[in-house]
Image (cartoon, rainbow, N blue to C red; front, side, top):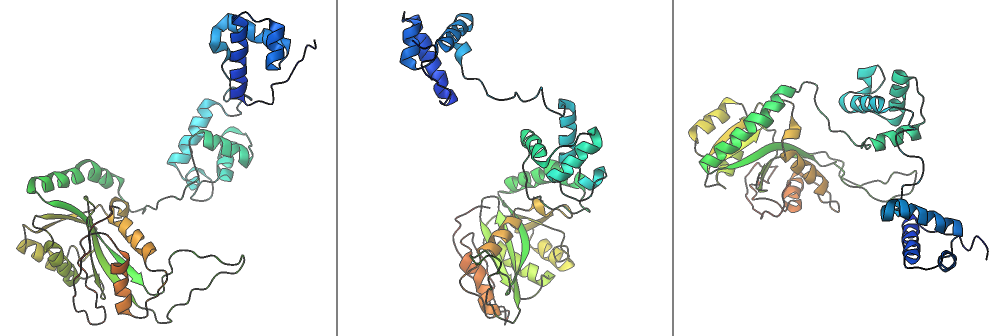
Length: 350
């Protein structure tokens, strides 16, 4: 009988492991080694090797092992160097460490490695390290350089917990508010087209816009008001009037530092309605703390894509038609500034 009856190397690693287990089980049951090799289509040398491993370590010795060069011992960068580069990528910009640019790429990470450790890696090699470190290529959020990190930390640790606790004592509700502008020439979504030729969207040549003031509650209820003019103290008071009319309990409204929110007229309105609405202010330059920003993004991306508004009245109606969230206070006649109110039921949360 030939010493090589078959070759199991074409099998998957898990299938090879199962083959080893079955072959050794046959040997344990008293089958002859030549018979085992013939039945399973492997060499006598393989059967003998499996038997020796089983005698030395039991079934664990036959378990499938990872193939290829082990990760770690033969890497160009040591563990300390890898940790330092990973920390630099996560905590600094390229320009902070003497390189060019604001965003990290594989090329710039490679330049950092070469600068620190005199080791030149290909972009593919750098990519393998980045993946091993649990990093991925992402679109970053924007943060204003004027933002105060300590103020943001106080918001998370002190201010926001205090607002929630106060609303709970009052039996009220927490809402976040923000303003969004909608333009007639805004194009949302994508469409198919020929490569090298950008598709054209037909729209009115007249530019016009409307604004909307919206709120989102921590329970997922949404309210918004559409208006033609800019956000002024008068508009803000009108919005507060409508918002207060939808709640039987006190509203704790979180807003940014817009001048209309801090105006004397708004302060007077709040003083006259102490049990209706209380304003709380986000840290400056911190829109990422406001979940109503997600409502703005959703609204702009969900505007009707089949129909394009031809005047302000049609544009003002689009948010109502495309928003199926929240109890809505909506001022829709942009041309005459006359107020009309409509409402929809809450179905989504941001």
